[in-house]
Length: 296
Image (cartoon, rainbow, N blue to C red):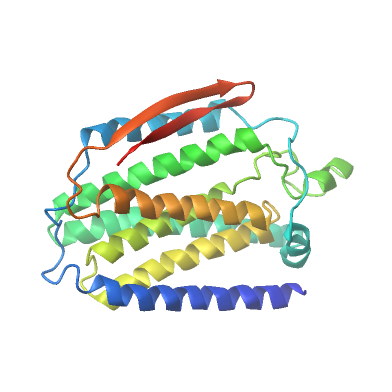
Protein backbone atom coordinates (compact mmCIF):
# COMPACT_ATOMS: atom_id res chain seq x y z
CA UNK A 1 0.00 0.00 0.00
CA UNK A 2 1.56 3.32 -1.07
CA UNK A 3 1.44 6.46 1.05
CA UNK A 4 -0.65 8.24 -1.63
CA UNK A 5 -3.15 5.41 -1.73
CA UNK A 6 -3.38 5.40 2.09
CA UNK A 7 -3.97 9.15 2.17
CA UNK A 8 -6.71 8.85 -0.46
CA UNK A 9 -8.43 6.24 1.70
CA UNK A 10 -8.17 8.53 4.73
CA UNK A 11 -9.57 11.42 2.67
CA UNK A 12 -12.57 9.30 1.71
CA UNK A 13 -13.10 8.27 5.32
CA UNK A 14 -12.99 11.92 6.38
CA UNK A 15 -15.53 12.98 3.74
CA UNK A 16 -17.80 10.08 4.69
CA UNK A 17 -17.53 10.95 8.40
CA UNK A 18 -18.46 14.58 7.75
CA UNK A 19 -21.36 13.66 5.45
CA UNK A 20 -22.68 11.00 7.84
CA UNK A 21 -22.43 13.31 10.85
CA UNK A 22 -24.09 16.19 9.04
CA UNK A 23 -26.92 13.99 7.78
CA UNK A 24 -27.55 12.50 11.22
CA UNK A 25 -27.42 15.73 13.18
CA UNK A 26 -29.48 17.71 10.69
CA UNK A 27 -32.36 15.38 11.51
CA UNK A 28 -31.72 15.40 15.27
CA UNK A 29 -30.86 19.01 16.05
CA UNK A 30 -33.76 20.98 14.56
CA UNK A 31 -36.65 19.76 16.76
CA UNK A 32 -34.77 20.12 20.04
CA UNK A 33 -34.63 23.91 20.32
CA UNK A 34 -37.26 25.37 17.97
CA UNK A 35 -37.59 28.50 20.12
CA UNK A 36 -33.88 29.33 19.92
CA UNK A 37 -30.89 28.91 22.16
CA UNK A 38 -31.89 28.18 25.76
CA UNK A 39 -31.17 25.73 28.56
CA UNK A 40 -33.87 23.09 28.86
CA UNK A 41 -35.33 23.35 32.41
CA UNK A 42 -35.46 19.56 32.66
CA UNK A 43 -31.68 19.29 32.21
CA UNK A 44 -29.54 19.17 35.32
CA UNK A 45 -27.13 22.06 35.72
CA UNK A 46 -23.60 21.59 36.99
CA UNK A 47 -23.80 20.06 40.47
CA UNK A 48 -21.64 20.89 43.52
CA UNK A 49 -20.14 17.40 43.42
CA UNK A 50 -19.09 17.94 39.82
CA UNK A 51 -17.15 21.07 40.77
CA UNK A 52 -15.20 18.99 43.28
CA UNK A 53 -14.59 16.04 40.95
CA UNK A 54 -13.61 18.26 38.03
CA UNK A 55 -11.14 20.14 40.21
CA UNK A 56 -9.65 16.95 41.61
CA UNK A 57 -9.37 15.35 38.17
CA UNK A 58 -7.86 18.49 36.68
CA UNK A 59 -5.23 18.87 39.40
CA UNK A 60 -4.47 15.14 39.32
CA UNK A 61 -4.00 15.09 35.55
CA UNK A 62 -1.65 18.09 35.66
CA UNK A 63 0.26 16.58 38.56
CA UNK A 64 0.65 13.21 36.86
CA UNK A 65 1.73 14.80 33.59
CA UNK A 66 4.41 17.06 35.08
CA UNK A 67 5.50 15.13 38.17
CA UNK A 68 5.14 11.46 37.23
CA UNK A 69 6.89 10.95 33.95
CA UNK A 70 6.41 7.75 31.93
CA UNK A 71 8.94 4.98 32.64
CA UNK A 72 12.43 5.45 31.24
CA UNK A 73 12.46 1.92 29.84
CA UNK A 74 9.49 0.78 27.76
CA UNK A 75 7.13 -1.90 29.00
CA UNK A 76 5.88 -2.49 25.46
CA UNK A 77 7.78 -2.14 22.19
CA UNK A 78 6.64 -2.54 18.60
CA UNK A 79 3.39 -2.45 16.69
CA UNK A 80 0.35 -4.70 16.73
CA UNK A 81 -2.03 -5.78 13.99
CA UNK A 82 -1.48 -3.36 11.08
CA UNK A 83 0.60 -0.81 13.03
CA UNK A 84 3.88 -1.55 11.29
CA UNK A 85 2.47 -1.61 7.76
CA UNK A 86 0.57 1.62 8.39
CA UNK A 87 3.71 3.26 9.75
CA UNK A 88 5.69 2.20 6.71
CA UNK A 89 2.99 3.56 4.38
CA UNK A 90 2.22 6.83 6.12
CA UNK A 91 5.24 8.16 7.98
CA UNK A 92 7.13 11.09 6.52
CA UNK A 93 10.83 10.45 6.00
CA UNK A 94 12.40 13.90 5.61
CA UNK A 95 13.28 15.94 8.75
CA UNK A 96 11.59 19.06 7.35
CA UNK A 97 8.49 17.09 6.42
CA UNK A 98 8.33 15.57 9.90
CA UNK A 99 8.57 19.01 11.49
CA UNK A 100 5.76 20.35 9.30
CA UNK A 101 3.37 17.47 9.87
CA UNK A 102 4.00 17.54 13.62
CA UNK A 103 3.24 21.25 13.64
CA UNK A 104 0.04 20.50 11.76
CA UNK A 105 -0.96 17.99 14.43
CA UNK A 106 -0.42 20.66 17.10
CA UNK A 107 -2.42 23.18 15.07
CA UNK A 108 -5.33 20.78 14.45
CA UNK A 109 -5.58 19.84 18.14
CA UNK A 110 -5.42 23.47 19.28
CA UNK A 111 -7.94 24.56 16.65
CA UNK A 112 -10.48 21.96 17.75
CA UNK A 113 -10.20 23.09 21.37
CA UNK A 114 -10.45 26.77 20.37
CA UNK A 115 -13.58 26.11 18.32
CA UNK A 116 -15.35 24.15 21.04
CA UNK A 117 -14.36 26.09 24.15
CA UNK A 118 -13.64 29.52 22.71
CA UNK A 119 -16.24 29.86 19.96
CA UNK A 120 -19.09 27.45 20.72
CA UNK A 121 -19.06 27.62 24.51
CA UNK A 122 -18.19 31.28 25.02
CA UNK A 123 -18.40 33.58 22.02
CA UNK A 124 -21.61 32.26 20.46
CA UNK A 125 -23.84 32.00 23.58
CA UNK A 126 -22.52 35.28 25.02
CA UNK A 127 -23.12 37.05 21.70
CA UNK A 128 -26.70 35.71 21.80
CA UNK A 129 -27.18 36.97 25.36
CA UNK A 130 -27.16 33.51 26.95
CA UNK A 131 -24.55 33.76 29.69
CA UNK A 132 -26.24 30.96 31.65
CA UNK A 133 -25.80 28.59 28.70
CA UNK A 134 -22.19 29.72 28.27
CA UNK A 135 -21.43 28.91 31.91
CA UNK A 136 -22.87 25.40 31.67
CA UNK A 137 -21.04 24.68 28.42
CA UNK A 138 -17.66 25.81 29.77
CA UNK A 139 -18.12 23.77 32.93
CA UNK A 140 -19.01 20.65 30.94
CA UNK A 141 -16.00 21.24 28.69
CA UNK A 142 -13.69 21.49 31.69
CA UNK A 143 -15.19 18.35 33.22
CA UNK A 144 -14.75 16.27 30.08
CA UNK A 145 -11.21 17.50 29.43
CA UNK A 146 -10.21 16.89 33.06
CA UNK A 147 -11.30 13.25 33.08
CA UNK A 148 -10.16 12.54 29.53
CA UNK A 149 -6.71 13.94 30.25
CA UNK A 150 -6.49 12.13 33.60
CA UNK A 151 -7.24 8.78 31.97
CA UNK A 152 -4.74 9.37 29.17
CA UNK A 153 -1.87 10.58 31.34
CA UNK A 154 -2.40 7.72 33.80
CA UNK A 155 -2.34 5.20 30.97
CA UNK A 156 1.03 6.56 29.81
CA UNK A 157 2.53 5.32 33.07
CA UNK A 158 0.74 1.99 33.03
CA UNK A 159 1.38 1.05 29.39
CA UNK A 160 4.84 2.58 28.92
CA UNK A 161 4.68 1.91 25.19
CA UNK A 162 7.69 2.91 23.12
CA UNK A 163 7.31 5.41 20.30
CA UNK A 164 7.33 3.95 16.78
CA UNK A 165 10.86 5.32 16.25
CA UNK A 166 12.22 3.87 19.51
CA UNK A 167 14.14 0.93 18.06
CA UNK A 168 15.46 3.05 15.18
CA UNK A 169 16.64 5.63 17.71
CA UNK A 170 18.36 2.90 19.74
CA UNK A 171 20.35 1.92 16.69
CA UNK A 172 20.97 5.51 15.55
CA UNK A 173 20.40 8.41 18.02
CA UNK A 174 20.35 10.83 15.08
CA UNK A 175 17.47 8.99 13.39
CA UNK A 176 14.98 11.58 14.64
CA UNK A 177 15.38 14.99 16.30
CA UNK A 178 12.94 13.78 18.97
CA UNK A 179 14.85 10.61 19.85
CA UNK A 180 14.73 10.41 23.64
CA UNK A 181 11.79 12.80 23.98
CA UNK A 182 8.84 11.07 25.62
CA UNK A 183 10.12 7.73 24.37
CA UNK A 184 7.60 5.66 26.33
CA UNK A 185 4.54 7.92 26.02
CA UNK A 186 3.14 6.48 22.83
CA UNK A 187 -0.05 4.83 24.12
CA UNK A 188 -2.57 6.33 23.88
CA UNK A 189 -2.06 9.44 21.76
CA UNK A 190 -2.54 12.58 23.84
CA UNK A 191 -3.05 14.77 20.77
CA UNK A 192 -5.68 12.42 19.35
CA UNK A 193 -7.38 12.21 22.73
CA UNK A 194 -7.56 16.00 23.17
CA UNK A 195 -8.86 16.60 19.66
CA UNK A 196 -11.42 13.79 19.91
CA UNK A 197 -12.60 15.09 23.29
CA UNK A 198 -13.32 18.40 21.57
CA UNK A 199 -15.18 16.58 18.81
CA UNK A 200 -17.30 14.66 21.31
CA UNK A 201 -18.16 17.84 23.18
CA UNK A 202 -18.99 19.66 19.97
CA UNK A 203 -21.32 16.94 18.75
CA UNK A 204 -23.03 16.67 22.14
CA UNK A 205 -23.55 20.44 22.38
CA UNK A 206 -24.68 20.97 18.80
CA UNK A 207 -27.01 17.98 18.91
CA UNK A 208 -28.86 19.26 21.98
CA UNK A 209 -28.55 23.04 21.62
CA UNK A 210 -29.23 25.16 18.54
CA UNK A 211 -26.01 27.08 19.08
CA UNK A 212 -25.88 28.41 15.53
CA UNK A 213 -29.65 28.63 15.13
CA UNK A 214 -29.63 26.39 12.07
CA UNK A 215 -29.69 22.60 11.95
CA UNK A 216 -27.23 22.34 9.07
CA UNK A 217 -24.84 24.86 10.59
CA UNK A 218 -24.83 22.93 13.86
CA UNK A 219 -24.32 19.66 12.00
CA UNK A 220 -21.39 21.10 10.04
CA UNK A 221 -19.81 22.35 13.29
CA UNK A 222 -19.87 18.81 14.68
CA UNK A 223 -18.55 17.41 11.41
CA UNK A 224 -15.74 19.97 11.34
CA UNK A 225 -14.43 19.00 14.78
CA UNK A 226 -14.74 15.32 13.86
CA UNK A 227 -12.63 15.98 10.75
CA UNK A 228 -10.07 17.86 12.85
CA UNK A 229 -9.86 14.91 15.23
CA UNK A 230 -9.30 12.52 12.34
CA UNK A 231 -6.71 14.87 10.85
CA UNK A 232 -4.88 15.16 14.17
CA UNK A 233 -4.70 11.38 14.47
CA UNK A 234 -3.45 11.03 10.89
CA UNK A 235 -0.77 13.69 11.37
CA UNK A 236 0.49 11.95 14.51
CA UNK A 237 1.00 8.73 12.55
CA UNK A 238 2.58 10.58 9.62
CA UNK A 239 4.84 12.40 12.08
CA UNK A 240 6.02 9.03 13.42
CA UNK A 241 5.03 9.88 17.00
CA UNK A 242 2.30 7.27 17.32
CA UNK A 243 1.10 3.97 15.92
CA UNK A 244 -2.38 3.73 14.44
CA UNK A 245 -3.51 1.75 17.50
CA UNK A 246 -2.34 4.64 19.72
CA UNK A 247 -4.46 7.21 17.92
CA UNK A 248 -7.48 4.90 17.63
CA UNK A 249 -7.54 4.34 21.39
CA UNK A 250 -6.91 8.04 22.01
CA UNK A 251 -9.84 8.90 19.76
CA UNK A 252 -12.15 6.37 21.40
CA UNK A 253 -11.33 7.62 24.91
CA UNK A 254 -11.58 11.27 23.89
CA UNK A 255 -14.78 11.13 21.89
CA UNK A 256 -16.38 8.73 24.34
CA UNK A 257 -15.77 11.00 27.32
CA UNK A 258 -16.36 14.22 25.40
CA UNK A 259 -19.75 13.04 24.17
CA UNK A 260 -20.94 10.96 27.12
CA UNK A 261 -20.10 13.33 30.01
CA UNK A 262 -22.45 16.17 28.96
CA UNK A 263 -24.99 13.78 27.46
CA UNK A 264 -25.38 11.44 30.43
CA UNK A 265 -24.91 13.98 33.22
CA UNK A 266 -26.80 16.92 31.75
CA UNK A 267 -28.53 16.47 28.39
CA UNK A 268 -31.04 13.95 29.72
CA UNK A 269 -34.55 15.15 30.48
CA UNK A 270 -35.46 14.71 34.11
CA UNK A 271 -31.85 14.20 35.20
CA UNK A 272 -32.21 16.36 38.27
CA UNK A 273 -30.96 13.94 40.87
CA UNK A 274 -27.45 14.25 42.18
CA UNK A 275 -24.78 11.95 40.92
CA UNK A 276 -23.13 9.58 43.35
CA UNK A 277 -19.45 9.16 42.60
CA UNK A 278 -16.62 7.59 44.57
CA UNK A 279 -12.97 8.41 43.86
CA UNK A 280 -10.34 5.85 44.89
CA UNK A 281 -6.61 6.59 44.68
CA UNK A 282 -4.50 4.03 42.85
CA UNK A 283 -0.87 3.47 43.71
CA UNK A 284 1.58 0.67 43.49
CA UNK A 285 4.94 0.36 41.86
CA UNK A 286 5.11 2.84 39.01
CA UNK A 287 1.34 3.14 38.65
CA UNK A 288 -0.42 6.20 40.07
CA UNK A 289 -3.86 7.59 39.39
CA UNK A 290 -7.48 7.77 40.43
CA UNK A 291 -10.37 5.38 39.89
CA UNK A 292 -13.90 6.77 39.69
CA UNK A 293 -17.09 4.76 40.13
CA UNK A 294 -20.63 5.74 40.75
CA UNK A 295 -24.25 6.02 39.71
CA UNK A 296 -25.53 8.87 37.54
